[in-house]
Image (tube, rainbow, N blue to C red):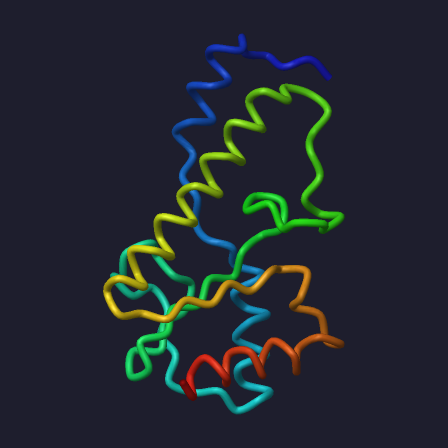
Length: 139
């Protein structure tokens, strides 16, 4: 079906849509925390880079990243769309660069950062994910 808007109008409309987080991956991470007894986390904290979860006592920031948007290396979900390749390559490059700035800034401020890929939030990998979080908290 053809778009009813021109390219410029569609771009303007889409630019006004603001992200509301990665609800499904965050809910899955909460399930993993609860199932493995990980406590002390907070959401929606006013910390640079907007981590999905923080553990204030351990100063650990956890990001649950989508493989597509944050370019999980080697992941089948980090595919490159077939149309508007230049746009997507620029978008992905800026996402990855922003992620690096966020990690570096938080580390300089005394935070440990942990990035969890959405493809690792499966039931078979939940114990591995929990172990990574526990290791970060115990340091």
